[in-house]
Length: 320
Image (cartoon, rainbow, N blue to C red; front, side):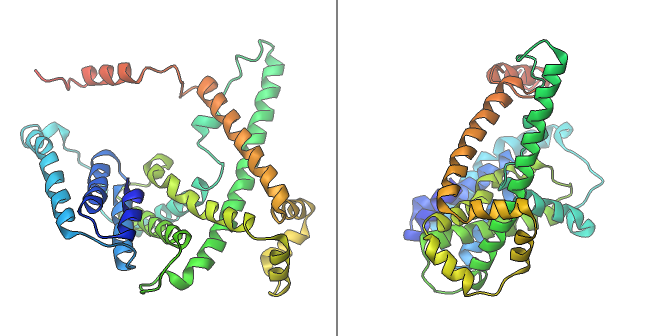
């Protein structure tokens, strides 16, 4: 909703899209801890002249959000038990530094296939066999494959993010320069990175993976843009470009080991890369099937409605 309305605001000034854009931030504020990231993205887009704002739409959205908070404020005034006290403070992440670095690492991880342990590593393979040693062997092979693929994908994510940063570095500052849609998306992702860092710096808690899950689709933008650029550039053009630049430390490192030379051969050939993408699609399908059927935390058989009703009753949230 936020990204869609921002794209529409890029094309023209509109009351409706400005209203939806601000509304998406306010609704996220009521649902998730990472809502400030959306606000920072919007501020950056405004600073960078990447959208046209209808201030009437903004005002209408703010009034709508205030009205939506009236029931909460009424309950807050009459029920002190919903207030939370904490020994943490705004700016905890900035003072301790490591929460900010951790949030930045999460950005790289979101662009990879290194998923949460609760999804990928808690399988038990009880459905496969009753023979203990066979089940243990399958489990070991599966976990090894998952973490190897995850580790390699983190390296790829870091590299593609570095190339993305080199592309957008000359255009991150305010200007009237016209941009391609791909460049606009890459700058939107840059706003998300800034939002992650600011949110982590101001947050009174240290973020876990689920605190920042809102930026998951934004973290994939540099990866997708890098892959699209690679697939739409001919092998000859890439070879000419590599021969015309100085050899980097990264290139030296790639040529140093047999495994890195193999990976280089795969990811510098568009035909091989397409096969990798098809393999990745199949891998993700298998991963999701196993996670939904064998995870000790998540299950496709869970009754969401029943869980919500049980929680409401336990917390005595039903009106009297």
